Length: 548
Image (cartoon, rainbow, N blue to C red):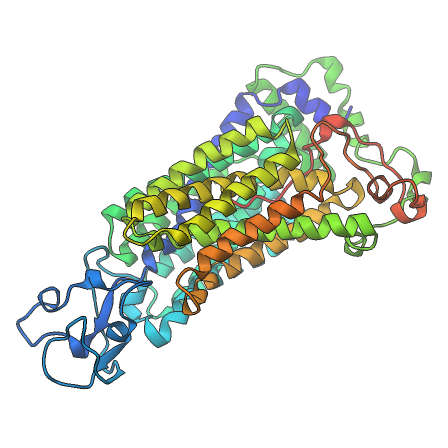
């Protein structure tokens, strides 16, 4: 009897697992805060040179209406330069020789009391530093995924989750007191690494305690909690307009997770694989008792068999199995085509998801309302996937990519005065990309054969993180054209939708086990390796990286 059969007997999603998912989902809310808080803390308010402000005693608002300035359609010469004539007030129609700002900037406080931009003047020539701050955080996610994935395999899921929750709280609070911009982005980088450590390993811990039939639903539950955090952040940011106080408000509650030391269980599956058999069996007994399905005497006799089932039954087979490497993902024609397309889909989905999520101020509506709408969209987008996935992985993937890409492209034809229509189209684009991102988790795991599945998922994870790093940089394209970022957000999913046509349908079909299964009978067993035994029941048993 193997571990999955034991989990099925004690309850695949009983009281024990439900309580576990409460502990898993609570941090997800705060992870959403950290992932998206830069929308508010690093926002760029309308601004103009201090040298062009009114004489003492006159307010900036009476001298110049900040609403005429915007990142896309405003007058950059008013934001980043000062007229060299000294004739008094600056009119919108004036065209005079201008010089660089020498005395700093005046910022609108209509929406934000302060941001990192207003505190450290990250505008004009220093605007790239602000983008670098967001990309550095995303780079932290990439480093954390690589670092804490391997450490969790060595030291266990629980200890890595606890360690990263502590890092997240300490460095998150530290960022609220950063003395300068460079210390701030260094602290945010550390928060990014910890977010990856928690997301991945909490997801894995939940999956390893859940029955195979309930795993897809369990994964969606964690996504819902991320959506809850997305929505709550809009309200918190609306109430707290100072960036330091906001950063502190989302980080300080992280210290409350200290009680996880007593309530968060270890992974019995990991313990069995790492010579912790007695402790694993105690945890299984506890879970069975809590689920109301205590182990019978007959079942406890399977104790020794539970351990043995993790060892190869036929040692002679070891000599037959060919070790597979990353290069096998691209060594053969069909496998190369499938791998490169899947890698691109991971990259494009995450690039556009965060490209839209981190730049909601560009759509012209109230930033807090837009954040709330984008958060609400997450719920139906993730729910609809439950109904479409079992019908077709391939059609679901290409359809949602097409919807997302088309909606993003249409926004470029909407004038900025029609901000509501532009936001609705962006919302539809976000809906399509969110659904597509949920599908790629399952689809990519089924496209890769068993012998290189983890390698394929790992490379997909890397490509996704690179998309996240580049997402904030996408808006440098505004220097070419104000519409360029949304053109990219539209074309990337549409290209992905077209490429999906070249992938196989995997819904309700046996998983490929070897490279030979993918390439066909013309490929020798020597190239594909020995075909392992795999059951259809375990289609979703592979642990997939989690990218909320």
